[in-house]
Length: 466
Ligand SMILES: NC(=O)c1ccc[n+]([C@@H]2O[C@H](COP(=O)([O-])OP(=O)(O)OC[C@H]3O[C@@H](n4cnc5c(N)ncnc54)[C@H](O)[C@@H]3O)[C@@H](O)[C@H]2O)c1
Image (cartoon, rainbow, N blue to C red):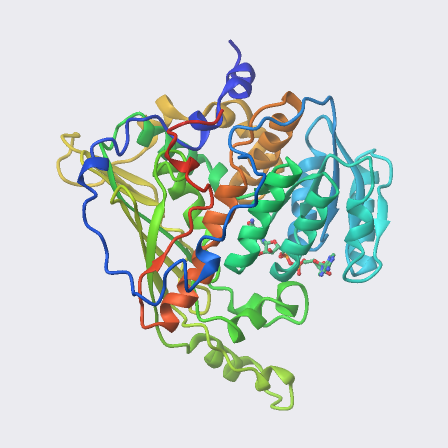
């Protein structure tokens, strides 16, 4: 069997979820019930668990239809949209049918990228904030991908689902529980997938660790740590690209603003929505100083509107999640202070541990005693087939060390070969939910917030999909 055949035949469980191994022993011991604040219940906060629509069926385990080529429509051709476009253009069987952006210059750059690669020029939609509605209504698109500012992800995805299109979004997929539930209900109603295209799930290290977890190398998994600690001050204050919209979120929400890069991979290690689920979250936010200090240092003109902004997001947010089987996750966010980048990417089990940045492993009894070891030997044995097959190509053609290429390649592979996608709308909603949940928890003095079960009970089926 070739590497390609192996990776094409991998089920979603093999890829990102897990075997029944992990957590089996923890299920029985999860007897502790937290004192959830009485005023935060499903009755007083209906967004935590709205009633299910009368007719619904799960999207877990639903296959894409098989197709020879995948026809994409792209909404938002800024930095990220064009980056993913360049990866899609490097993959066989991809056609870019239409592109949309509110800024004509951005679509023009995307069109040129397509024609430079020998593809026909895609149709262009630049008709204001709602121009995407005409794009999603076309009948020659299989998958709508959106890379707009956060506030536009949900309108684009809902319109795509309503038009019967599979769709996927950048992070976070939505910013309120109400919107996340709306995506779940719309995906189930349309019988179309709505995915969070989380590139970090496809990192070489993350895919390796996921395999090690599910091979039982670390024993039963007890705890994991995830983060987005990335000094974005310069980008946030630019007068272009993300500087035009992302800083505004720091005036709106005191929360863990960007949870998915860290939480996506870790949720795979913990079999979230495939045997376990998050039960509740508590969150603390520290002081906000980084953006104020950066403004003082870099915005000399006090008439600049940036001086009117009041930042409310605590620079360093620490949230803790507990699963119904009793495992814990620490999730941190800070984009406003100087430091090297990390997503933590840590996991602790009964037999050992892994930590990233830089990657290091400890398995009880390993040579060298109680100190971290290199991962090279593990890599030689357990590198994921998708990386074994495509690693060189990925590093050459893909952003973020190649994981962006692997994400795009795998999306196209699942769409062409009629496979179950590696994640679904329940995962998408789960990975983004810490944004609103942490906001509510911080506002209520770090009260525990019940975590919605977006699967409405289907999480318990271990490896039910794929
Ligand atoms: N996965 C990753 O590694 C990664 C990296 C960077 C950004 N992102 C995410 O990608 C998304 C886009 O970020 P970016 O860096 O490309 O920002 P950007 O500002 O460069 O691009 C956003 C684009 O959306 C366009 N736009 C705004 N409103 C629109 C609308 N209503 N319809 C169509 N287009 C619209 C803007 O004109 C702009 O070209 C964000 O969600 C961001 O968090 C993800």
